[in-house]
Length: 152
Image 1 (tube, rainbow, N blue to C red):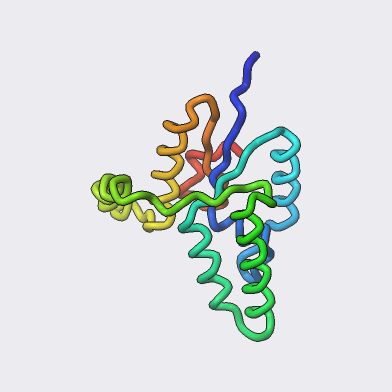
Image 2 (tube, helix red, strand yellow; image 1 turned 120 degrees about the horizontal axis):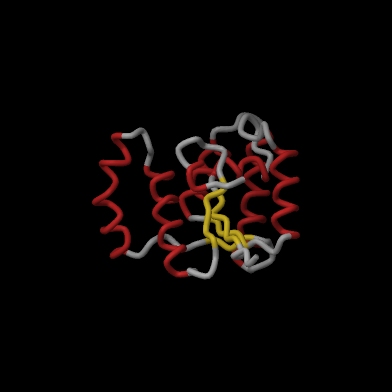
């Protein structure tokens, strides 16, 4: 039986666990175990721009010395991802034409309690599925509004 290789779009809830952001990483061990298994399976990972921004915002909200340390880690890890030295690849901010099309759908999602970050991740998954039709593109998230795309 042929199984299509998987591509995972990493949501903020996963990234904050990987980076061990205090108050946002209650599932770190489990996430790292699953991450290791998915790497062994040959899965690929994409990091959408909104998840990078949201993670940076969570770091800014930290108190004390940990804020600077986590910001440094965030910068170093994000640079490594941009250079291709991590198992995930950052995705670019959507082009204007895509964003204009996406915006038409946002009121429907917002009325169902889905914020713009999660909405854009859903749209990014849809776009990547069209581009990578030989892959099974999923969102990896702990958020219930994104789990319909996640077959953890």
